[in-house]
Every structure is written in structure tokens, then in C-alpha cells.
Amino acid sequence: MLVQTKGLTKSFGGLTAVNQVDAEIETNKITAIIGPNGAGKSTFFNLISGLHPPTEGTIHFKGTDITKLRTYEIARLGVGRTFQTTHLFEQSTVLDNVIIGHRLRTKSGLFDSIFKTGRLKREEAACREKAHEVLEFVGLSEMSHRLVSDISQEAKKRTAFALALATDPEIVFLDEPAAGINPEETDGLAELMKKMVDKGITVCLIEHKMKMVMSIADKIIVLNHGKKIADGTPDEIKNNELVIQAYLGGDTNAPVN
Amino acid sequence: MEKVLTNRNLSMLLLAIAILFPLFTDNQYVLHIFSLTFIWTIAVHGLNLIGGFTGQLSLAHAGFFGIGAYSVGLLTVKMGLNFWLALVLGLIITTAIGFVIGLVALRTKEHFFAIYTLCVGYIIYLLLYKWEELTEGVRGLIGIPVPAPIGPITFDTPRNQYYLLLFFLVLVIFLMHRIMNSIIGRTYIAIRNSEELAETIGIATMKQKMVSFVLSTFFAGLSGGLYAAFVRFIGPDISYISVTFDMLMYLIVGGMGTLSGPLIGTLLIVWLSQYLQFLQNYRMLIFGPLLTLLIIFYPRGIAGGYQMWRAKRYMRKTQQLMQPVNPVSMKEEK
Image (cartoon, rainbow over all chains, first blue to last red; front, side):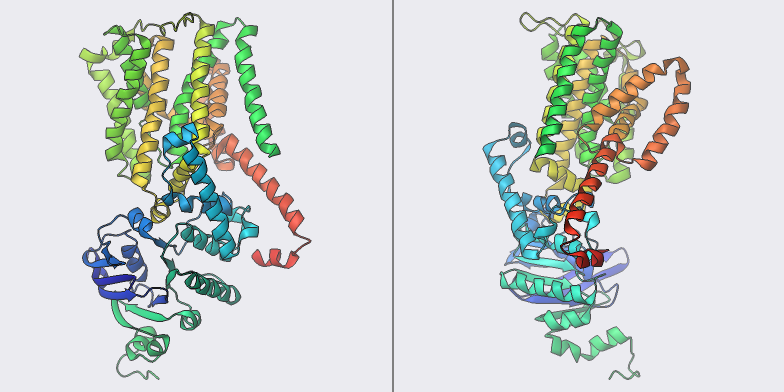
């Protein structure tokens, strides 16, 4: 078990965005989190990556309690993530965007930069090398010198993946990686996620594209109104009545089949 | 590689001109204005570091400039300290106050940070203005000594002062280059780009912002200390809000978040205001529209605009090279 949440809850004033969620993410698998809009999926991600402090409950990563850690501390433990909107620096090149991803594994400070110490040179070389390595991995080597504002939405998503991978994570949380991307490119991204798992990186994603989710996920967790309503393999989820109701909005009288 | 060489050569050429310049002129007015420009540029570099590169627009900058100037002024005039010792102490005082203010101010974000620091700047001004027992209030401090000689080098002539200020400016520019061309600088830019993303890739944003903020107050304090010894009279007005906005104007015109912006903007606006002196306050009738147009068409200032133009030209070149190889994929991306 790589990540485990127990009774995880987040309230914003009167709204409980995530409500008593017990979830488990297994090592070296692809776990998908699905649910209708507003189900609390992104909030769930934000809780695990430490952007919001939970109201209640605990989060464990590799057995250690990370509930109260800061976002950057969680990242340093090996938890990477991407955002729905990629947040990249558009006026800069792909490579320049990704180089900073390895910063958390470096120790240089202001004085190293002023005196150009050996440590700084070594660490900068390591950051650069890492950036090339992850860009190669996501298949963007040839675009590395192009401005981010100038590349396709799909390439931006790949750049965001590369940035997350440059942190040397053990798990990556991908928030709607295939949003705004055509079906062909979606398949490409699915391939890339499988490639990450092959490399030993656990993947957890939020996604609305069911075809993709069903084909790549080893396990699916379904959230609705902040609560976990089901989890299991794609086949189990497909036939789960609660899930079908949540998606089709049916009540007890509506035909669910 | 070619481009780097041109940039470096250009900097070296400018430096050579700056060094040789006083040998060819005895015009004290010109030397005086250039010296002032150097002082302001140092302060603007500080504002650029925190506002332009780290994305936290601090409007307390003139306040820290004032703290640096008053520290040096008080320590030399009232306590009779040597200028250099006073400058070092002044820098320690400024950065210490910067650190304490940063601890609180950096907890606020974006425009709240700007508003908060604007208030801090105004409070510093009020303190310098109203705390008469210490600062002499509106009378200001008179008779601040020129920098003490270092060995045989004295600083009592305009020419020598010019060289002293040029030395500090070059030092500051050198520091900024070193910082911003390293992963430390990239860290600041990552914070400016998105604090959320920076946190999730493991950057301790609070600590990094703190370092950047304190260093920016260091530059402001240095600039203020040099100003005190150069002009030799200081009043509370030097820390007034409008001084912050003057610095901000220099920075915006030159280019926020660029290394050459502070020098370009300060030189341009300071000289332009000198030439437009005869218009008195009507100068603003010219500056206002010019600044508005600049922000609309070149939001990243002169240096930023040039960078974008060069990047686009580079893109066009590389695209032309790529087009025949794989025209289909290029179309798909659009």
C-alpha cells in the first residue's frame, strides 16, 4: 500500500467537499478516481499533496503519516502531481520549464549562486540532465527548445508530466491529464502512463474519459458528493448500481439498465 | 553561443564607456545625474528581484531605501562613525527590519501583498517624518560626510564619487546575473509563475520568497546608504510612496523580470525628466500617456519587448527549418 487515507474529510464552511473517504492506492498500479463534477476529486488530490489541510482524517504515504506535512515536504518524499490547467511558464522553453523540477533534490543556496561553487555547477548539470531524461521519456526531446506558448495542448500536458517526473516521484497524481485532448492523443497519453508504471512509478489519475479509464486503470475509486461510493476493478465498477445512478442521475424508479 | 558573446561584448563595451566617460568630460552636472542614476538603478534591481523575478510586488521599497539612508546618516552624523562602518551597520539594520517585515508580509499574496507593503512603506515614511528626536523630522539630516577615503583613494570629487557608485552598480548587476542565471534564479521565477506548482515540485516557497525579499531590501538599503553619502542631505521625503512608484516606473519602462531592465528604465526616465525639466510638473502629461501606451503594447518593458521579439524571430527561423521535414504535424498542432 503506497498511499492510504482514513476518514479523510475536508469542509469549506458549510460544504463538505470530501467526506470520510477511506482510500488505498496500491504500489505500481494505475488507480483512477472518477465521479461527476463537484464530487470532490480535485479536493481529494489537493489534500494528499498538502495544498489543503484536511479537516479530519489521516493520510499515510509508505506507512508514514503525511497528514500535517507541507506541500513541498510531501513532494520531497516522492509525491508528484500535475494540475488540470498545466500552470506552465508560457514565455519560456519546454526545457527551461522542466529543469526546475529537479530543484528539490539540490542543496545550493544563494551563496552557491553568487560564488558559482562546485556544488552549484554539479547540481545544475544534474538538473539539466534530469530534464533531458524526462523529456526523452515523455517524448518531447525534439520540442525541448520551443516556447511553451507555442506547443499543442497535448505537448503541454506531456511537459507537465515531465516536470512532475523530474522530481523523482514514487507516485504521480495526474489531474485530468486527457482533458481538452483529441482521442488519438488520449491513447498516446494512456501509453505514457503505462510506461510510467513499467518504470516503477505508481499512477493515480482523475479522469472523465471513461473509455480511457476503463482500459488502463487497475483499480477505480468512485466519489460522489464527497463520499466514496465504490471502489474496485473496472469490471466491478461498470456493473455497480450506485455508480450508474450517480452518473445517470436515476432514482429508484428509473431503469438503470 | 554567438548570442551570448554579443551580449557579453555589449556589456563590456557599456562598462568601458562608463569607465572612460568621466575622463572626457568635466561637466559636473552630467556626472551628478549619472551618479544618481547608478544609485537608483541599484534600488530598482532590488525591486526587480522581488517584484519582477519572484512575483511579489513590494511597495515598501522606498521605505527600505529610507531606512538605509537614515541608518547611514544617523550613524555618521550623530554617532560620528566612519562611513564604511555605518554602511555595513546600515545594511544589517535594513535587512533585519526587512526580515521581520517579510515574516508577516509574505504570508499575504498577490495584491494583498502589494497593499500590505504599501502600508508598511507609508508607516516607515511616517516614522522618519514624525520621530523628531531621532530623525530630526522634516528638517532632515544635514552634513552627512562623504565616504571616508580607502587608502590613497578619496571620494570628495564628483569624478571619484562617480567611480565609487559605478563600482557598486557593477557589483549589484554582477550579483543579479549570477543569481538569476542559476537554479536559484529559476526557483524565484518558478514561484512567480505559480506558487502552487512550485510548492508541488518541492520548493519551500516561503523560505525562498523570504531570501528574495531580504536581498531586495539589502539592495534598497545599499542604494539608500550610498544616496545619503552622495547627496549629503536626507529628509523623510526620500521614503515617500511616490519614490516607490518612481522606482516602479523605471522598472516597468525598462522591463520587469529582465536583467537589463532596471538600468535601461532608470537611465531613460531620469534623463528624460532632466530634459523635460522646463515643463515642471506638466512632465507627467507626457509620462502618463507614454507609460500607458508602453504597458498596453510592451507589458514587459523595453528589454522584455526586445526579448520577445528575439524569441519570435528565433521561432520563425526554427519553424522554417522544421517545416519541410514534417509539415503535417505542424498543422495539427495549430
